[in-house]
Every structure is written in structure tokens, then in C-alpha cells.
Length: 218
Image (cartoon, rainbow, N blue to C red; front, side, top):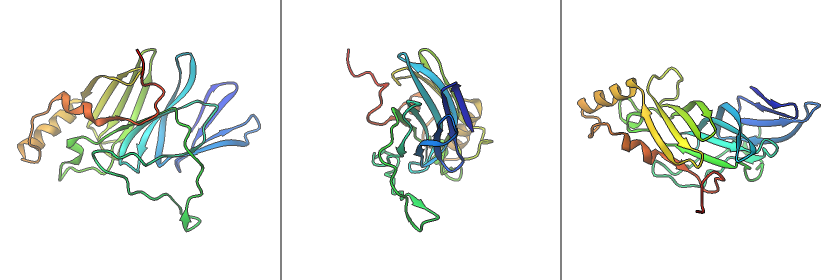
């Protein structure tokens, strides 16, 4: 998939998890390797700066993810060092063609990284899904909306839409009807021990360290 935000900027998203930026002669000048896939994207302005927002899944954390880049600085690879409540990634990055570890691309140049942890519906057996994933994102002047499919297949009907302000504070998170129905079914089956509350979705957003969008001062 290729994005053309302007005459001087082109970004290619590849099925193997890489993001490549070619020059005007279509020669690759930079590359970022992501653990998983980033299939949805949008160019937008943030505080007057051009940013590329991408959404998909981070296989290291088994979580839906949103990342942002300066379109002119796309390099490095995914950092899996952050511990999360759901799991600590014991995920080794290998190059299948080399039989060993992937040659490091260096630190990733993401300007922001967000993970959306799987919900209780996703984790409950027998409905357990190993991954969730971003299936759409919309960046507006003062809002970022991310729709997360609570499964690894895009036809999975249970979705959560997270609406955040431009500093990634959660404004509201709302499930679709299918998610609420599934939550009730699992509760009645004894596989969940609580009734659904929107408050249970707020702790599932993890803004990883170093995000430029987070407001740190007054």
C-alpha cells in the first residue's frame, strides 16, 4: 500500500511489516520494521507538523497498535522492552532467510506508540482470540478515533472505538452492539464475572514512553 500525502512524500506499507520511504527515483532511502502489520494510515497535521499515523497489530504484545512518524524520518524497528499488565513479550525477531536474528535497524523513530490491550471478551474462553487489531483510524483537528476489532480476523464483529484528544487522553470508548451482546453471553455462561461497564475499557490503552503528543507541562 502506498501513501501520497504530497508531491515530495511517498510511503510504502508492505505485507511483511516493513515501511519504506522511496526517493523521487523510487529508490529506498529509509525503512522501518514493525513486529506485525500496519495496514491503515492517515497523514495529518499535529501542532503544525506533518505526521503519518498508522494502525494495525503488534505481534510482540498481541495487541492492536497506533504509531506515528515524521514522514521524513522513518527508520529503525519495533521496541518490545516495555512490560504491560497483559504480558511481557518474550518475542524474538528472526529473519527467516538467515536462520538467525534480524540485523538490527536501530531504534525506531516513532514519535508516538499506543497499544490497545485485548478486552475481557477477547481473552475469555472459549471465545479467546490471540490478537486484536486496528481496523480504522481517523485523525481530526482535536480528536483521534481508533476502531479496534477484538479478534485477529477482520470479519470478527465485536469492535471498540476509542476516541482520544490530541494528547491521547481518552475522551470516550464505546463498544458496538455485537460486543455488548457477546459480553452478556459470556457473563451468563459463567465465563465472565462482571457486567459490562465502559470504565473497564479505559485501562486498556497504553501510551508508551516518549510519545510527543502527551502533554507534560501546564
